[in-house]
Length: 112
Length: 111
Image 1: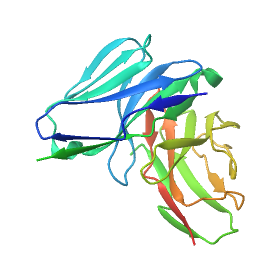
Image 2: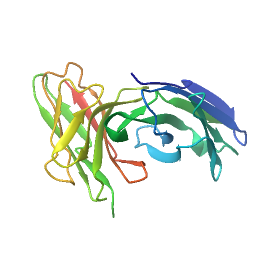
Image 3: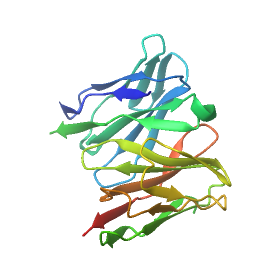
């Protein structure tokens, strides 16, 4: 089966850097994605890693190590608006990678 | 504007009733998904469809049904067989890079 593990909550202060980890277990692997969801809203796509290494998009970066079945999302220069839930997701090899499974989410609280 | 439209946004249902949640997309995406989200929880996959006239069960398909007669539409029916239907339901479509585009969700409450 598939499973993803990420911390349930993280707290940080404005301007700081925070790292949200995700470990996964799947029958196959196509890539690791990250999504942001503000309370009551729709999740929005942040990043995708298919290969090992770091992908940078502005203040957000995402890292993947396929040999360790591990990835993380790095948020820099935290702002109050970054307070949200962050989900890692994997594309499973089953059915040509069409199945996307999400972790339980990490609730990030940014304090002044 | 291109996007995913879910309706209704809020829905109340009596026990024993079936309800259908609408999901329409004009992004020309082949793949569409239905997820369920409970308070403080992640997204659990109900059904997905990679192409018209084809769909597969996700991890929690029991008590739900779907159809995919048109590329643009992927309605979800919550049947009376679903024991705990009160939840936030999210529909999404997937582009060629694998990115999911979500609708604003439908919040179902069983009275």
